[in-house]
Image (cartoon, rainbow, N blue to C red; front, side, top):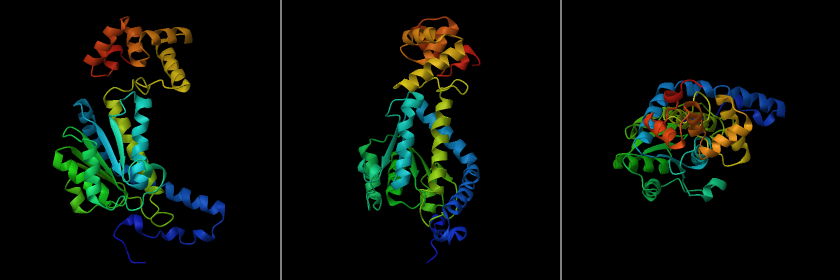
Length: 299
């Protein structure tokens, strides 16, 4: 096999005989490879922290976060974006995922959709990217034309740009991004199957980006999820339990305060702790930049 400069395309010498392995041996081999992923992500701590700072600024400035990718990378971006509204009570427009091939590609591979950079640029235009937004390109191999086209268009529009990759990047990519997060996870268990270690590393990084930025803009109080959107029985129960624990209320009283707060856990906490009305609580939260610790202290 011709040596490809992309590490994600190299053969893994530790798994060359995996087709002869027993199920137990396959599990052991994959676990051993997966244990290296967190260390690869840790090498990018400074870059991830810098990205969180940028995204926080974008959110506070009224901008949005877009993920763009193809295949597994695109699906992971869509997954992370879709989890933000129920977890942090955000508008679905705040964090959006774009995948090469459009929505059908989420469920079934759209071969060839990623091969043209102009398709990436077109997708950015269709989503109305603005100069106060941020675009994160996700490309395990670092070479996906769709992603590179999207990044180039975003950079030309004056938006903040980042890239997540799992192999060293060509200079033509790094020169158009504000932050390059490159977690080199090494050759995959099955050669080129970046849904494995590279996909795991990407998921870990995306978790950090949105969770970190949401924490910074006040979506948690300590480690309590106080800006969640109670869209189902489980989340309604969690809302009530957070209020019960943090304000020493019974379930019935917690439910009553939440109703007065319009279902907002954050507003309910400030109302209960500060003894103020819903309108006053909301104003104090706004004035505190969303950080209720500044209003009511420690949880």
